[in-house]
Image (tube, rainbow, N blue to C red):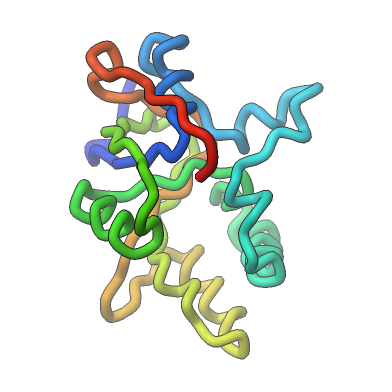
Length: 170
């Protein structure tokens, strides 16, 4: 199997991703991917269920579906960081005070992966259309903070030596 060269990083808030990898010999899968299966359509992620920017995400999704249909949806995606340093920055900003495990992730080329600059999501509402197009086109802001949006399977490095710490809440 062929993988993207980059090692990505995931910050596991509940232990579920590592738990799934343990059950599947290192492999895990985005909720967006397995929720396409019959009977699992209602599966969701904490981000999809609880985020506050529904209007923004709806617009991002419409632009993706209409203009960039080959890109994976952000809804129910597995969000990855392009470096350990970026994951650590997110822990200090986005996830301050949360207990998360760092997982090194390899993404096979058979999965659908988009790397976008999350800073586009900080645009003023009046600029959402152009910011969404820039995000999906892969354009970077002056000070990018890149995120991987994954639809499909991923492999957790060192899954055999890691122990899942199942936790409540996110």
